[in-house]
Image (cartoon, rainbow, N blue to C red; front, side, top):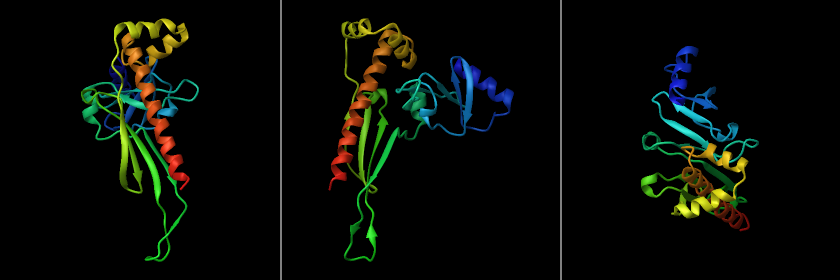
Length: 204
């Protein structure tokens, strides 16, 4: 449905052949971007559609602060993406004196969190960098679960929370809502470790 609306909107407004993505929210075209970016500018549940019909869903975050990332909705979209960096934070160290070269060397610590495809186990890949060198990281997979665990989580939610997680799910089902919840929790764990790593190196 979103793909059909996006294609029709492109034709009607002269955006056919211009690339980028059309964003659909609540079954209404909300805008166009020249590239997939700034998930925080969109509410969770928004769908971005490129000219080939690949789609991404805005997930995480909330309606007030916006989403936290664009999540591919199919394996075809995963293949379309060469790399999706959803976090890339930098923290500069104080300049380090270099006795062999005149001047100072600025070393930046940063991290990136990237979504992992389903066939890789899903979840997130955390990567640490010192300057341009990758120096470590970790994998934050979405844990396996059974139906009983899923329904126990669902029954604890308020109606508003249920509606919110259904909006963030790839499909509006209880199991997909729970998967969205676990995916968000894994992302939070990755961010917590990343921030701790930055703070540790900032104290050196």
